Length: 176
Image (cartoon, rainbow, N blue to C red; front, top):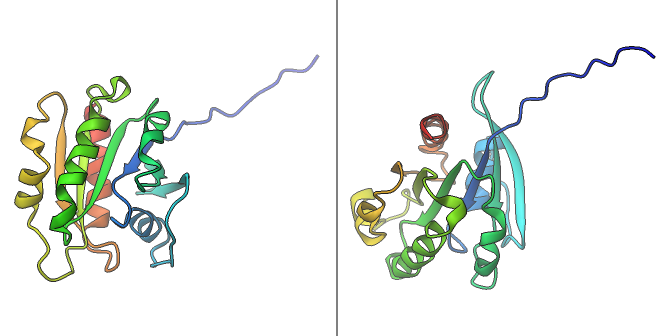
């Protein structure tokens, strides 16, 4: 019997991309992965993509649908999560309360205990968008004392802030 040599496969870390519907999660993911804006439709279930940050760093990103009917299923995606990325539409003040409740609920899950959090305040290119300070206050991020967290502004359509956000996500993962 001959010797069998297998390549050592490096497991890419799992990042969960969650948030309310229409926050721009899929647009953000595909913009970062492919460098272009793609037409998207509401995510039913999830999308998975590998985002290559540099020659040696890649992230496996799971984009989970954010419609109200999908949110009860979020708990099924949490096991093995290394960083939670919660995307909000920073131009939609009227849904910040709903986003805050959804975020608090998901962060209370045992599988996310101590998992770092990155909040992306998307759609910063739109007029009257909230500042990251306002988003932080409305989401009550200061109460997240049991984990590392960051908040960054971005625009999925314009590509603004995405590379920096994903580099920060990789750093959060290293700290975890």
